[in-house]
Amino acid sequence: MTLAEITKLFDDHAHKMPAIGKTMKLVFDEGVVFIDLEGENAVISNEDKDANCTITTQIATLEALRKGELNAMMAVMSGKIKIKGDMGVAMQLQTLLKD
Image 1 (cartoon, rainbow, N blue to C red):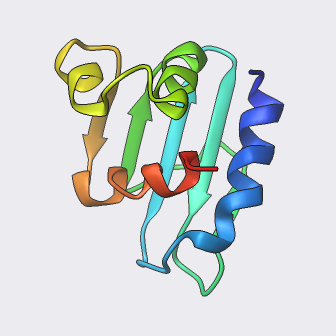
Image 2 (image 1 turned 90 degrees about the vertical axis):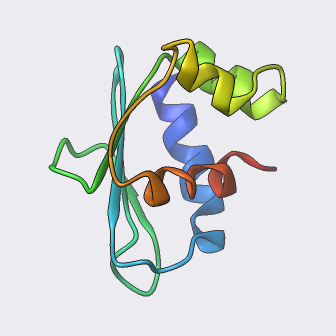
């Protein structure tokens, strides 16, 4: 997947995200996906802004999570995913990864 494909995937699933009054940022080598959950509807962009939760990983790792080839907890424990900030916000990411 490319950054553009991930951004579109998240945008397509944004309607499933709850308004929790927080923001999340995913940082990849290729760029950033910013997820704003502050308003009634989730807003997905490629803006690099401060967020309540920042998740740093590789696109290949995110794809393996999405396909069920990698367990999220194991990915965090092995260092493939790094999370800074509000873990509760990070838990919302699974909503965006499901088809």
